Each structure stands twice: as structure tokens, then as C-alpha cells.
Amino acid sequence: MPSENDIILTDILALINEASSKPTNALLMQKILSAAAKAASVDGCFLFELTSENFMELTFSNIKSLNLDLNSDTADRFYKPTSLTEIRAKEKKRPAELCALNHEIINADNIYLNDDIDTSFIARFDKKHNYSTVSVLALPLLDRRDNLMGVAQFINAQNDGGKVISFTPEARNLLQSICRLLSMAMENRHLRQSYARLLESFIEVLARAIDAKSPYTGSHCQKVPIITRLLATAAVEENTGPLKNFEMSSDDWYTLHIASWLHDCGKVTTPEYIVDKATKLETINNRIHEIRNRFEILRRDAHIAYLQKRLANTDSKEILQAEFLAEVKQLEDDFAFVAGCNTGDTPLTDDDIKRLEQVGSRRFTRWFNRMLGLSWAERNAVPDAQLYAQPAQETLLQDRPDHLIEGYNRGELYNLKTRTGTITKEERQKINEHIVVTVDMLKALPFPKKLQNVVEYAGNHHEWVNGKGYPNGLTGDQMSIPAKIMAIADVFEALTARDRPYKEPKKLSQVLHIMQNMKNDGQLDPDLYRVFIEHKVYMDYADQYIDKKQIDEINPEEYL
Image (spheres, rainbow, N blue to C red):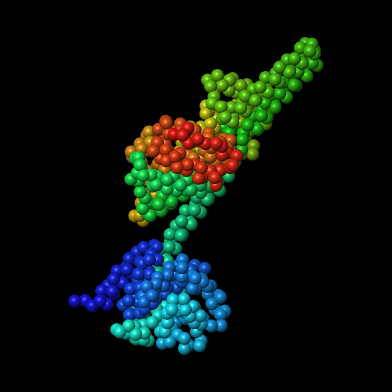
């Protein structure tokens, strides 16, 4: 039959194996230390850990005879976190501090008889609990590179009768062996935590880089995770209805966190001028200015023609002047119309399209060589360079062969004829491609098993529950709840954002009205939308992240 110590050691090994495989295991560390104290017949144990800022911190203590457990929240009443620099400067140091600084074992038969050691901490502890500390053993916890991770301190070794004795060689060897294994477990934990922090930092850096790429969508990737977390929390709290059984494990929460930060990582491939396209003629700059110059030319031509007719006395001054003013008025009206079409504020009608074509067909004479000052790529896009080099009659609004660039049509008339918004169908397709790129990028990352749903959560946030979203046209039944949560978060952040050049900031009531219509049209999940409204997720977010001028009076019942 195995002895009690054999059973305890077997349990310790099992705990160490478990601790090595978990990223966060403070409770396991405490169990290991307590079990080690029991195996070595020791009354008390303390665990000091070194923080990333090089502070010694008492994270756990247990005194068996006092039935006393202290965790990191209560232990600092007895031992305040102290930096190694401060410890090094102290004249007298506590046992654990000496052990930490010198990486040496401190073994005292009676701690109060050692004048070189600061016993104030131990004295306060003893007085507080009517306890008597005698023998002390402090062991450094070092990683494989001999870097300090902490100190395990044991007090009051006992014989079989319960009398306090010095630490025997057998007890020291046993505790040293266990602490070496504990050090390995701590090192594994630290490595896992470091890699997790590295992953999260990399993800956040990537998200911020995407936001920084566009001054108009800045912070979108940073704010969607906030709304996602708020809505997911509200969904988990549901006790009735279709979501009453919805739960999320710690791995689910972490997966959703990572997915929400990475949901738009594919936008690194989307040209800035498309993401930021505030007007129909915008590429790197708004080309309405070039068209305005052509109207200026036509007005100047009209003025020249008027003056020539005056000199030739082709008609009376009054009639010629009236003709000129009428021509100027028509040019001004036509330019105002073209400029209005450029903003995309109002959907274009068939009559608007016809008028654009009519205005665009007006002609003027270009005298200067169009080929001068072009890059080689622009020159290669011109099919007949000689034609562009000679003076020629050109239309006011132009769709030229050199406007067809890398799958995009930058034709002026073509872009102005976009019926709604500012984005052409090719640009819309490119924007939609960002989610495909996102999925491809995420699939290329070797996520561990517990994060295997990152691709699904992030890759489906543009799907609609009616099956008309993209990229795969999934229905609500084919989407996970976290993916549908992200879809709502993405829409809400985009609608409430006040930094988009293609729209004015909307009032909160307007945003909720749009989202209600999207829910009614089958774009947003109705059950999650109800939670979003009933739990006032919108207001939890608005109070911190939306301009106060956008927040107006909301009656939730109106938006259900």
C-alpha cells in the first residue's frame, strides 16, 4: 500500500502537470505549495512572485495550525510589493528578500536568533495571529536560465509529534525537488502568458495600423470589440427566450475578443481612396476641381465670343449681353448640378442621368499636350498617344480609355452616374473583398484549438440572417451567435461614427431607426437586436464613446 506521502507526491505531480498546461493557474500554484508543505511536515508556506516590473509580491500564504489562507488581495497587508532596487538598498533584508537577491537557500533553525536578517515582517505576522515562527526555509524559484521568478518560503518544520524542529536534510531535499518542478510550471505559465500577450499586442497593433491607414475610419477596429463585448454579455444574461441557453466559456470569450479585433484585418489590401471615398470623383483628390476648370474655360470662351460679337457689331449691346448672361447662368446651373451629383447625398433619377449625359457632351478645345508630365504607367494606359498630344475637341465630362486602371473605372461620367452613394460597383466589390482577404489571412494563421472559431466569428460579420449578405450568403441558421453579435456591433459602430467623410454624424435615434429597418429587412438577427435594445447596450456604449451632441431622447419601445 502506498504511504500518505506517496499519495501526496503523486497529487503534487498531477497538479504540476496541470499547472504547466494552463495559462492562468494561481490557485494550482497555491495547491502545489500547500501539498509540498504537507508532504514535508511543515506548518506554513509563503509564495513570493516577481512581477514583470521586478517587484517582489506576496501572492499566497497558508498556516495549517492557524487555518489561515492569504491570497494576493489580503497578503499585501503584511508585505507590501517591494522593488528589487529598494530591497537591494536596504541594510537588513528579510529571508525571502535575501533568497531572491542572491539566488541562495536561506535555512534558519531559529529565525529570531539571526541578527543579519530583518524579522520585522515575521514579528508582525506572529503578533497579529498569536503565532511563533521558529525555523524558516526560503528557496529561490529559478527558470532554466537562472532568472528569478519568485521565492517559496516554508516555516516551522515539525516532527511526528507536532513539535517545531529544524528542517531535516530529507525535508529540504523534498521541498527543493518540488520547488524545482514548481519553477518549471511557473516558467511554462510565464511563457504562455508572454506568448498570449505577444499575440494580443500584435493583433492590436495590426488593428490600429488598419485604423491609422484611414483617418476617417480610425478606431473602428478598436471600438467594435467594445460593442461586441457589451452585447455578448447582455446575451449571456438572458434568462428567457431563444437566447436563454446561450453561454460562453472562457475560451469562447477569448476567441470572440481576438475575432473582434481582427474582423477587418483584410482592409490592409483595400485602397485608401475607396475606403475614404467621400465624393464620386474622388481618387487621391476630388476631381471636381478639374471639371470646374473646364466650366471656367467654357465661361471664358463665352465671354470671348460675346466680346468678339460686340466688336463686330453683330447685334445690339443689350441682346448680346443678355445672351452672354444667359449662357453664364446655364453654365453655373449645370456646374451646380454636376457638383451636387458628385456628393452622393441624393439618389439619382433617370432624368438626372439624362441631364448628366447632356451636360457632359458639351465640348471645349484642349490646346495643351495631354501626354506631358505623366508617369510611365499612365502613358502605357493611353492607346493613342499621338491623339492626346495634339490639340483636340473634348467633352466636358469624360470617360477615356486611360480611366480604366487595374479593374477600376475612373471615368468621370461613369462615376458621376452612380445612382446611390459614392462607390461604383467595382469599388463596392473591392470593399466587399476585404472580408474574403480577412478569412484568407486568418486561415493562414495557426490558431490553437481553443481559438479555432476566430475565422468563423470574424469572417461572417457581413453575413445577413436572410441569406443576402457576403461573402457566402449564409442564413441565420448557418451563423454562430457570436458572428451575429459582431454583425450588429460592426453596423452600430459604423452608423454612430462621427469621422466618416461620406456622411454627417447621425443622432442615436436615427441610428436605431436604421438598425430597426435592417432587422425588419432580415439583415440583423432579431433576437440579438431585441437584447441590444432591451438591455440598452447602445446607451452603455454611447455614454462613453459617442459625441454628446449625437445622443438624443430614446424610448426603447419604439425600436423593438
